Amino acid sequence: MREYKGIPASPGVVVAPAFVFREDELSVPSYGIDHDDLDAEWARFLRAVEKAKREVEELRDRTFRDAGQVQAAIFEAHLLMLSDPDFFDGLEARLRSTHRNIERVIVELERELVDKLALIEDPLLQARSADVHDVARRILSHLMFHERFNLEDLETSFILLAHDLLPSDMISLKRSKVVAIATEAGGRTSHVAILARAFEIPAVLGLGEVLDGIKAGDALVVDGRAGRLIVDPDKATLSSAAASQRLAHDEAVELSKLIDLPSQTSDGKRILLKANIEVPEEGEAAMAHGADGIGLFRSEFLFFQPGHVPGEEEQYLSYSRVVESMKGKPVTIRTLDIGGDKVLPELGAADEKNPLLGWRAIRFCLAKEDVFLGQLRAILRAAAHGDVRIMFPMIASPSELDRALVLVEMAGEECHKRGQAVPDRIKTGIMVEVPAAAMASDILARKSDFFSIGTNDLIQYTMAVDRGNQRVAYLYEPFHPAVLRLIKTTIDNGKAAGIPVGMCGEMAGDPASVFLLIGLGLEEFSMSSASLLAVKRLIRSVGADEARKAAEVVMGMSSSAEAAAYLADIVQPYCDATTEKRKK
Ligand code: PEP
Ligand code: MG
Image (cartoon, rainbow, N blue to C red; front, side, top):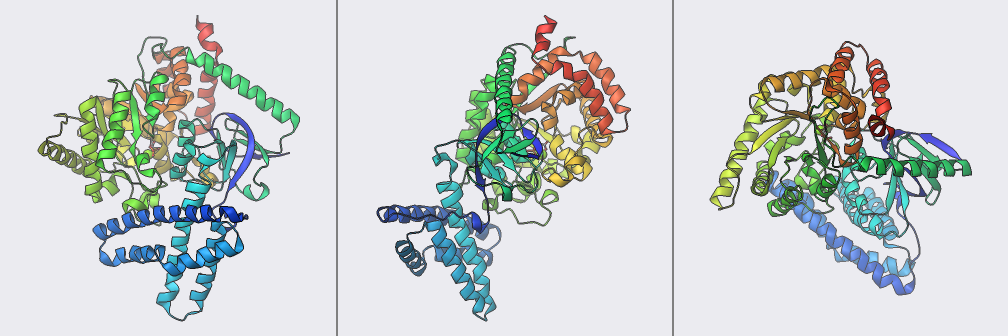
């Protein structure tokens, strides 16, 4: 038995075999194909090529629009390769002669082609190896991750092990048999972690180098609360895993009794509890957990469905579905927040050296007005069906907000001209997630209908710590005095301007933080649906006045560790199933 310690990212204990996902060539599977199955194998390849072609066509068109013909020519060349009869003949002949799976055939042919090109003393031809590689990878990705290993097809449940996953991977994982995740990279507030919690998939991230010692099929235990990965568990470990599963089940039954009870402190202060969602289906889970609305719809995840970019109409249907499922409760839709770790080349996002400080979120949308206007029209039209608010991510400067508001007006006028119903006025607010916005929140409050504090990024940018990098995770400190001061400044400035201030970062789903934040005057929290009831239990157990006094103490402390220990002492007794009973 071996045990590895990582970052606890999504709670739950799971025992299952390993499925190891490696992005490098070695992970391309190699197996034989029976003579009778060769046609089916070839058809599988052709389907993957069709998908790859559609992707490249979209990329070409967009690049043509945004950058011009010269840049778009790269993708023309890729399309030619994807229809090249010599390439196809070579592959099919090799498939039929070697009887190896098509992924292996592609990798071998690619290697030969690249070797041949390297021998030619023409830099232009040599540069073509990058194109060959790119095209081969694109087809492989459809064959392996989206198709063959499209985890949807697998019959048994397993734990997915990878160096790292992309937020877009998580969307396909959601529909699969993945029962837990363990990765070498990643941090507690990386988008992979957030999605794992949202989809209730136990996860341990940031394990460091473990992949080499684990092979497919090895027995694993993932303990997402403790942040442990165990390989080849012994009997005692298996029985303690079973005990943890029973406890978690009992806890869920206890918490479910709180669904219809009001979210208010023991001294009567009402606290709004909303849900963060990434895909429209989660709206139903939010309602089932008794959410007061959707505080953050991360709309960019609609754009991560494999090989597919939704247009205005499709977005409109998705937003409307959420609005309708919330039955009159408010829905805050955040406009596209791509960039950073959410890479979406299909929209023409650039490959940048420093993406977290680069062309992300509102910066990207203000430069891509056609994409932005399409989304704004879709949101405004969905707003005709219920209470919808628009929230802009990553606002750093008031001028960005001014321009975004102009574009909302323009989108509304376009809808009017088309005869589409949109509300006369829609609430527009911002995420406060960049220190500059927190410091200038008095100015921004004059232009906003609401604030929502995005602590995931606010901590990242305040502490200068990549939220997905396990090596510096120890510095990612929610209770650092600098972070707490920025939060307090934002709350105070929002209140002074008379606008509601909420929080939708991961701190909003952590009971100790919620206690402190109520003490700092916050009255609205948005979190993954799975955290709602545990937070409600805490809120119902404490007094707002008690929280205010504790917040005063914490604001006078000089370290994050001191604050965490102090808050844990107060809050811990209320974080188990016995508290509600004790109060009765
Ligand atoms: C945040 O930054 O706190 C936030 C809620 O947004 P995201 O996690 O999607 O960056
Ligand atoms: Mg953010």
